Image (tube, rainbow, N blue to C red):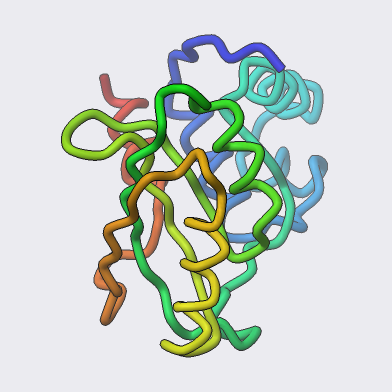
Amino acid sequence: MTMQSVQLDALDARLVEMLAVEPRIGVLELSRRLVVARGTVQARLDKLIARGAIKSFGPEVIPEAIGFGVMSFVTLEISQRYGHTAVAAHLADIPEVLEAHTITGSGDVLCRIVARSNADLQRVIDQIVGYEGIVRAHTIIALAELIHYRTLPLVKAASLA
């Protein structure tokens, strides 16, 4: 999928907000609530999807609710000989790795990982650093989530710009 910059207007923002609040809503109901033609809603959705602004309509799973109550952030230092692609492939094979990003600063990759317990976190970290392309890991355990991952405030701000 190609990602292009998308300029959002007020209708786009309202459409995204409605989908975020009620993901199973249909296009016809969206058009009724937004007081615009069904074709307009469909065209806007198609544009947002095609340009990569809307990534998915799938359910959001809360790791804690399915038994993964420990979340941590891990900074990895990698061997430059192996490179980011090989490390990413290794990390992708570990289900508890939720995200991985290349970063600037003292580390090379930042991961968000989950585990069932602190002892299980050790198992996950051992699995991560068991790959020879990873030199060192620095782990920070998250105690509480203060702000859940969100994009709606950003969507609203973008539609005002």
